[in-house]
Length: 121
Image: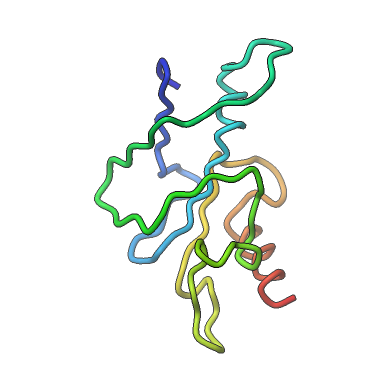
């Protein structure tokens, strides 16, 4: 966190955004602000985002904000990425969550497993 801005590198030794696939990037801004001690003790933890700047060579389909943590299956229609019958979602697309979380259920395999369970369930 730098002044009134947050800089998020989307490459880490543990996990990196894959190249050549449409990727859904989930950013938990509240968790980032909490870890940077951006809130005063006892303060209502609300904030608003005035702008978002993407500084990379990427194509952006859409930017959405929500207080709901979605999975592949629960994404609203306008946020979803379609697959043809019989195709696996993760063969075509990627799901990336930031910040990275330590412990069980935090790695790419666990995210894929959790999302796949909702796709198949």
